[in-house]
Length: 139
Image (cartoon, rainbow, N blue to C red; front, side):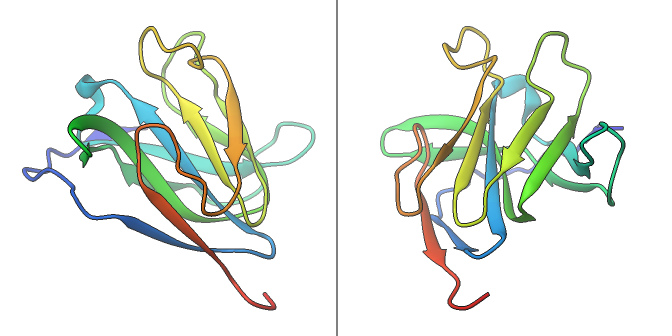
């Protein structure tokens, strides 16, 4: 069950991801109301059954250039399909993680991509965030 923490500071640091081989990452964009909320993800099998432990991250307010976004970063997820555990009617609740890539899910109200998930190539700048992905050698 998702729960809330209320971090006091604005995140201004770049995120550096160590992805490659069968390791990818996920960025979850949300509305400001989700600040401090911890959203869990877990791998799922082809039949939709949970196939591994849940992991979570908190939604942080991040300063990007001159604007603020609210996002959670899952920096190292093994390739596969994941379920996002949150009570969000109509929102994307599964995402595919691809090794060496950053997948994105956008839950922001009114977002054109609120119902879709996609991937960004390593070193690509994700909309509304600064993420530098470095590929892991030989992993």
